[in-house]
Image (cartoon, rainbow, N blue to C red; front, side, top):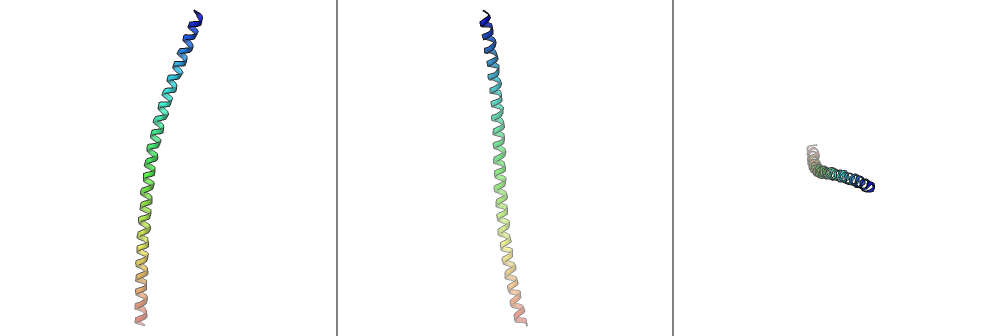
Length: 82
């Protein structure tokens, strides 16, 4: 009879450990899902920042081209005016 009582205690303890482990796994899965959600948000932000950087670089190239064109026109005007 004593052996059955001990077996019952061991099985009960094992079930408790199993339930705690299940709860931990569920918590870790929630944490992982949240981390993945944040990571996707950061990846999107990086894509948007890269697109903005490309847009700025393109606009700067256009402005430099315009300045070069104006500089060339001024140089021609100065040559003709001399």
